[in-house]
Length: 129
Image (cartoon, rainbow, N blue to C red; front, top):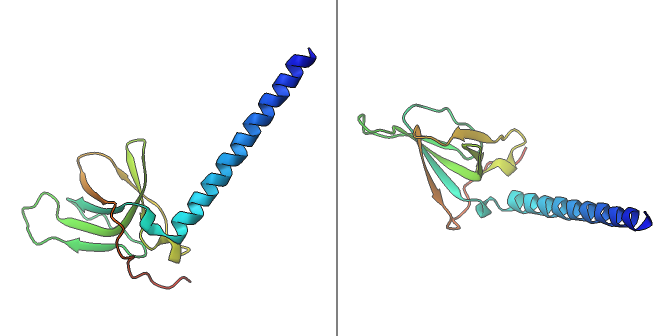
């Protein structure tokens, strides 16, 4: 009985240690991403309809070809994660604004997304408020 109790306690302590380690590593990664958004892939979104994406650093461009499948281009976005058939994007300057928010877009044929992993010059971000 003592051996089983001791084993259960050791297993509990091991799980607790792994949880603490994972939480610390996640926090460190979040701080690193906030300090340097260039670590996240740059993303360009093309859409058939206007999406009204807003945020610090996001630029909407209406493409000139009236017959193009995708008429609107959005730049100044970073890919955070792809999960549950959605792309979660952040504005490139999200760390400069307390009002910046994540954007969820469907992972279907209604949009075209381009990802760039080359480290590029950071966008001109407005100063933090």
